[in-house]
Amino acid sequence: MTPFTIQELQPLLAPHAAPCISIFLPTHRRYPEAEQDPIRFKNLLGTAEGLLRERYAPKDIRALLDPLGGLSNRDFWRYLRASSSKDFWRAQMDGLAVFRSPDFTAYYRIPMRLSEVAVVADTFHLKPLIQFLQSTRRFFVLALSQKSVTLYEGTPYSLGRVEVPDLPAAFTEALGLDRRESFLNLHSSATNGAAPLFHGHGGPAEDKKADLVCFFRVIDSALWRLLRDEHVPLVLVGVGYYHPIYRAISRYPSLTAHGVEGNFEQATPEEIHAKVWPIVSGLFRAREHEVLSEYTQLVGVGRATHDFLTVSRAAVHGRVRQLLVAEGVHLWGMLDDLAECVLTRGGKVLLVPGARMPSSSPVAATLRW
Image (cartoon, rainbow, N blue to C red; front, side):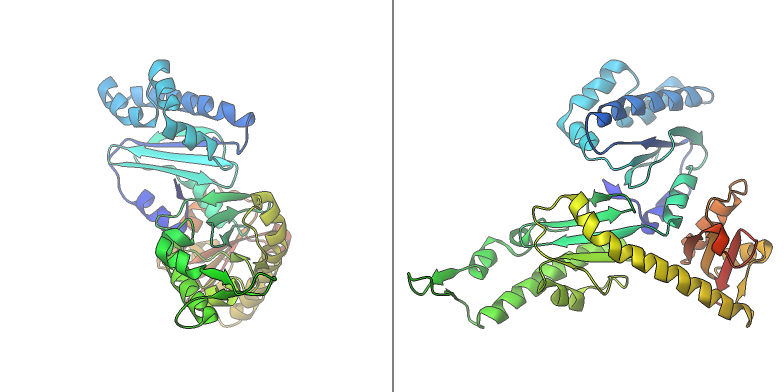
């Protein structure tokens, strides 16, 4: 399943044939709680069916909802018994977002609890995901070893595994078995415990680094296609000598300066999260302080404002570089619409505790010009 990133927002905002069905469901990572998730999803499909009946013919409704699980109990449970469906429900995060129209289908696992709702309209209902993208507490973790490569998406509370197209699962998948065997071709020079000898043409250290460089380039290419429009921190987790090699290759600008060193091949997501969170939480605090200080400086030269109308106009014209939104404030959806406008035009959004906002206004912005 595709993770939800800023890049994924664009096709959802594009025009689609009506009706557009949006389903949001809080999900569970573990059993027995997760056993109720497919049942609740089925109930939401029923809600969507009821909404569709007001305007559409039964055959059109069935064509829309069948790919999401079917309308009858028999069809739905047959769908759940399929192996792919079992895997689908076993690999959830904290929320599930499903979008369906006659010309579009998408599923997203979200590492944030979502309210349970089904919406049928002429466009997709995106406010819950806009709120997710606004979060200042999102981050990614790349757990790197020769035997496993995993990208996680994180919140202050947990990590969820992200499926990345073309990301190699291990060294052998990226470079082939022959390269792997050559890389680890070791023979002891004696039977008395002497150090093993590496065989190769460029010396053991050079050969090993060259293979790692190739391996890491494959990884970076896969991540770059997924994350190139993201700005949230990415923390590297792996043995120490991987870090400088991967950093020299990575094109992701928000790769953190410090990672976590060690062998984490057998570590659980909870164990990795405990090691990573002190790094990213410090970055979030520093980023908030930096943005607020910059706002104060730019107000004096006319490149920052807290006037809602001025911010809104600037957002429409792509002038907003950084939008500050008071955390927990709701203005009939206007703040979500404003954040969506800024994100889709390449700006950034930062949620700030109300007490730390630079004025009593629920919004403030620094401007590109």
